[in-house]
Amino acid sequence: MNWLTVNIISWLLFFFGAAFPVLILLKAIGLTGLMKVTRYESYHSFYYKMNPAVKIMLGIIVMVVASVTIWWIGAIMTAIILASYLTLKDGKRKFITGLFLTMMTIIGTTWAFAPYTPYVILEEAFHTGSLTTLWTWPSYFTVMGYQPALTSQGIVYGFQISMRFAAVSLMSLVLVMTSTPSQVLRSLNKVGIPTSLTFSLVVAMRTIPRIFEYIDTSVKIQFMKGLGSNSPAFLRPFYMLSGAFSGIVPVIVFLVRGAKDTAISADTRAFRAYSKRTYMYPMAIGKIDKMAVSFMVLMILLTGIVVMLGFGRGIAYNG
Amino acid sequence: MSFNGISGILNSPGEIPWEIVVLFFGAGILFTFIWGKRTGGLARFTTVDLIYIGIGAAFAVVWEFYIGAFLGKFIPSNPFFGIGYTGRLIALLIVAGLVRKVGVGMIAMFIFNLLSDLISYGFSGEPMYFLYEMLTYGLMMDLVIALAGPNLFGVKSPEKRTLAAKNKTSPRKGLEYITRMPGEYLAAFEGILIGLFWVVPEPLFYGGFISPFLYGGVVDWGKIVFDMIAFIPSAVIIGAIGGLITLRIVKAVGQ
Image 1 (cartoon, chains in turn yellow, red):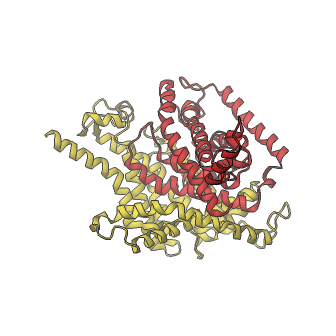
Image 2 (cartoon, each protein chain N blue to C red; image 1 turned 90 degrees about the horizontal axis):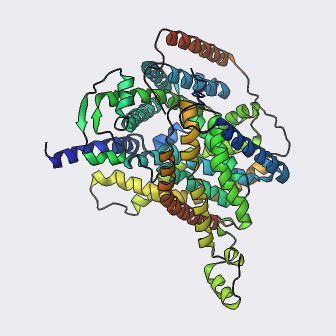
Image 3 (cartoon, helix red, strand yellow; image 1 turned 45 degrees about the vertical axis):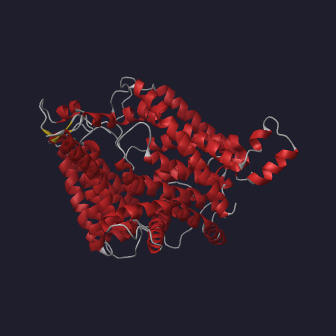
């Protein structure tokens, strides 16, 4: 293959790893999709009835199980958690958004490891002395930290690593989507985190979806003012990205200007007037929480058995 | 077998001796407690300060996990520039500029970490990351705030024009030169200072101890030194830009 073709294909592969997840984000999920999966919406299914502390524990257990077992257990957990998104309010939409987020995690993580992982680690991980080369990069790609060639083992290695992250990311979003910030505040106060810090955390949790909402508004206003109006349609995602980038500082100013109103509102409700707070609705441990805790114990026991059966961490995962 | 993603390896080749790390973190915690006791601790932060910290942490998280994470994919892994570093530094500089109290760096890093754990990491590797991020990035930022005093980022400096007229009538001497620097210069200077301080933790603490402690591996000191030096030019540029953005936002908010 001639020099030019090799270079064009190599750069296309490079941009695939970079641009495809961004394209999924902009075209399939959108800023409103991100807003949906980072905002609480009231509903009545089991996640919504669960104590936030139990949901945090569930997230930790999922993380521990994914990190000590073979990759396909992480994949099964990812599939189960993703399926459970259907039980959420507007479940279909959240399931699809979750699916795209998982795709982004898989492609992003695979591409973050596949071209960079040293051959020594791949040979150790796959117990082989010969790796299957899929594509040889131009020699100057090594400056970017690339290995001389892309191997099938590199891709499998990257994919397996992505299974350590996907389930935890999905489970963490469940907490944000199904607990009100004040429920999280009460749970964290119970474990001894001072009210001042949990208050900041709650402000942050409420702010994340608002950031997406305001950036989305800012981008739309820029489009209305003619941003990229004379450019071909395929360039639209890039204009959207540039609009989002330009919108960041105005959005910060807008949010920060509202801080004083929020402070007055909190202070007039006697925030920090007393060292201890009382709550109208105490955080109780209900039947669903007990079931969830039993399920977690079962998960830990099963993990122990699975590891003893030889399905523990199967690759030389490092980092 | 590891605990919560921590392998607890203390004898990786080249790893910083754990005694030094314990001493550093111990001194950091002690300093935080003593400083907190002397200055009133969390009670010194008003409700509006806590809201600024929350908003700043939210921006840092949105950048780290969504916007910056995807922009970063276009930039190959390199030791000269980090897209995650850029967003986090600017977000935290803005918070520091709005609050201007010693301790804001550590509190903001605590909230950022807690939020990152809740929405993505699931508390993997904790409490190591809390200690690491608060007592390196947070503490270094607080150090600059303590040194700079109430005129952090030149938010209290007079406008350039008024200053030029004043300087014509009374010549500047010694330290007066810095205190009467135009706000923009002071903002850029202090932004650069924090940016440079922030160059150190990732290669030195993370590469030299946290990473081998959590996951194992060999520590390459040549790489650590190279990474620190290679990052300085971009830290200077981003720090200066971050300082100027902070000054503009603080003025726009009406402080």
